[in-house]
Image 1: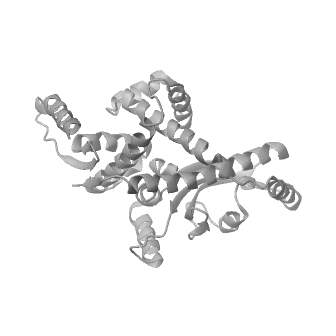
Image 2: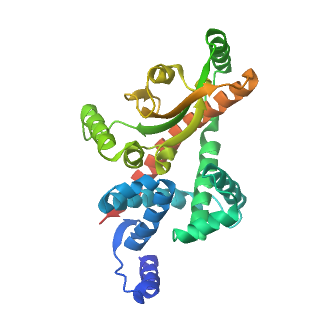
Image 3: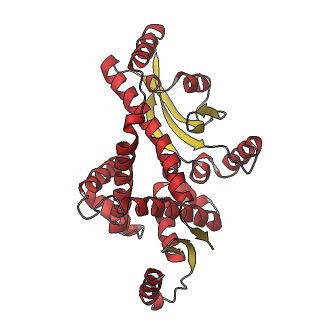
Length: 307
């Protein structure tokens, strides 16, 4: 409680001169989320997925609050396990990856964009650090539980090379979700489909998806067909660009995939490279599943109040 009082005093005087009302929107044990925090998170999420601006402000605020709750749950666990001041190298690595993914020229341009969008650089770096340390934690805890059948993956690649002349790669987006005990599966699917029809696939991913890609509107990016499971490949086979699949059962729940673009994969296929890519992808898929389960367990053990 003492921490909350001190925090409120600090933000009160920081915003008093601007006439900003400060309201508590959520509380996790001794941590709070205010309307100021939510406003900042909204700007960050709209930077990641500009289509969020198409939504009503109330819905964007809800997404931002949920995003901050997720971040706080992870941060609370990480601070008991890592020294944040010493573990800073991961920040620069993820920052560089982010800059390349967003097709930003360099750090200077990145800083200019953040300034225009009124985003605090240190806050963004803290987000990178939480993401990086969380991934390290999940890897350490669960890598031993990852099961990879290299023989089957190699066979998949060789059979695909033999059976098809043209290979394709797809630019994909995803919505990964689980069944909800509070409503029927049919109602949940209808809700997601209605959301996609109303506000688009990307915004619906922000609302419904439990995948790490949710903040980016579900964007996966370019993936060649050898890196996609046979079950998903069958669903993509006759799908047109800008269309999406029916829900597909996967180990972590269900996935809906949208094809953003499609092109012929013309590079010569190196079996070992493709095998390594498949192993990496399958490892990440399983670790993401463990991550979701572990996060839900942590969240369940916290006292979370929303206002």
